[in-house]
Image 1 (tube, helix red, strand yellow):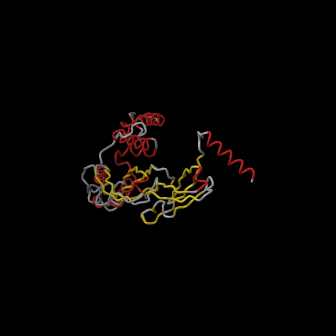
Image 2 (cartoon, one colour):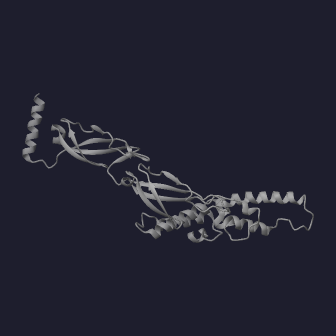
Image 3 (cartoon, one colour):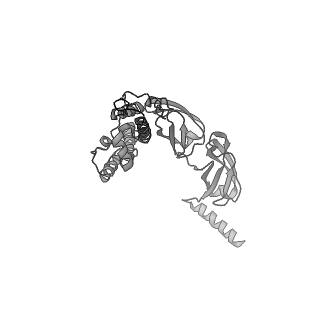
Amino acid sequence: MDFVDYYKILGISKNASVKQIKNAYRKLARKYHPDLNPDNKEAEQKFKEINEAHEVLANPENRKKYDKYGKDWKHSEEFEKAQQQQQQQQHSQRSYTHAGSGDSFTDDDFSDFFSSMFGGGGRASGRSSRSGFKGQDFNAELQLNLTDVYKPQQQVLTVNGKKIRLTIPAGIENEQVIKIKGKGGEGLHGGPNGDLYIKFKVINNTSFKRDGQNLYKEVELDLYTAILGGKITIDTLDGKVKLSIAPETQNGAKVRLKGKGFPAYKNQNNLGDLFLTYQIKLPTNLSEKEKNLFKELQKIRNNE
């Protein structure tokens, strides 16, 4: 992985205060925010880099590791643990090695050990070459419409320059995270690859409200259909459906359409229900004839 200069990304010096870091982040985040740069892939990538830099530098502990280890700062604990083990081995060896034997462990050895573990290109000692470390986990975000996750679909993601083909199961929830094993960074010294974590941002591009597997929708009824009954056609995610409206249907009445909701995660045949709420729409711009007819109806109703 190439070195990423977070200070350069935020346009600040290495001596910047936490306040200066936050101010720089806010300014750049506003400039490159996706809402202000729709369909601008370059701005989207810049926004991600700005967020990543802020997450590292605004955290004093992470910043300290980053300043010390650079691009390998996430592996700092593993290195320091291995370094302690080497120091313990060095101490043990001193108990059995006479002066001048040449078997002491120097700072150069530690530098080479660090390089061999984290890809710096230095020579590796025999002891460190047997150490294996899991590669870095990657995180990605994928934005989909609600209609995209009604059925399984194929997607190709580009993560860290590599194309990854995956099948997205039906029923993915907004903010849900799935793990794809072994699709992260390469393992170090024979260790396993890291994993890829994908967070889904599901945008509701429909007139339905989703709650788990159930869907909810308000349907307008004209006054005459509500009073006399009739037939209406509504849209569902699975196509159009004809409904019979009972005479004298009240405003706010609810009906349930079984199996017309949303699929369960990884089970597209297990569907929830669709709940409809009828909203009666009163007529407007009545003609004189219509007004007189309503007056007649009012008299009939009042005389009963």
